[in-house]
Image 1 (spheres, one colour):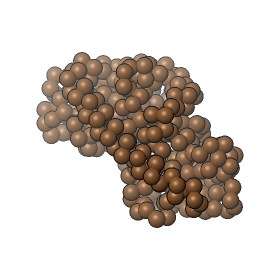
Image 2 (cartoon, rainbow, N blue to C red):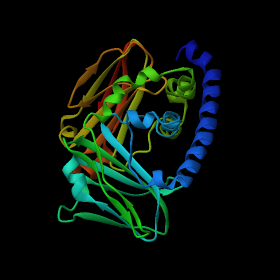
Image 3 (cartoon, rainbow, N blue to C red):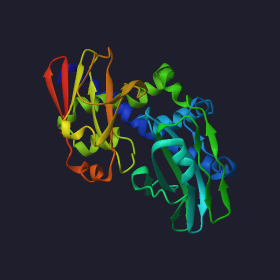
Image 4 (spheres, rainbow, N blue to C red):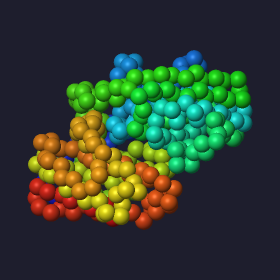
Length: 315
């Protein structure tokens, strides 16, 4: 760890405080907005170019979910009231994507209440009925490997709420290709501290590093992550026995946490130097229920092979 890292610490502390204040203020404003805008809460909101055109949308995402999932089409809705049951149309989901994961969150705490996913899908059911305590909830639904005709499903509750289907374009994620162009001093200041945390990773509790960097993912996702200097390459080795049972999705982010590039991993891969300070995040998702049960024993170990070369081994 060089002197540059130590010199960055005061600025990282300022960035840390700046992020926490913004997350608190913007998060509360957004919660207030959702709580009052009842019509908006009864429609699907897709993370897309159109969503980012709305005031504060980008700031909300950069404080609530700054580790963009570039591999899935993501829709959210709510908060919607529930007396005791929420119903989701599964046929629409199946016809739209090969793989999906949905989450139900309590509102306004955003605590994950339950998940539903393709691996536990019962093809004989056309609808999924979820029993819930009386309250308000939000729904998040990620489509991986979406098909040509993409539709988000009808959602109803026993509180006389009906969210209609929403058809979206297959290129709705193309906005990620230019998203890094929105980097500015504000977003850089928000996330400046993260790179410094990685430089001090050996001195900090791993739980703290994970809390600050990792997204709030579904229970079927495991993460491998780290940081790269401008001239560092990354060699990724996935053990043969860990390849076919899982899908691996890699995304690189700049220091402001905007996505730079992304790809699906199949085995051994070497990534060239990115030319700037960056983070990497691998989302590992199981392809079978048996693989899901084995996820907790899979580990990722990062090793510095040379001054300009890192290796990540997933075993």
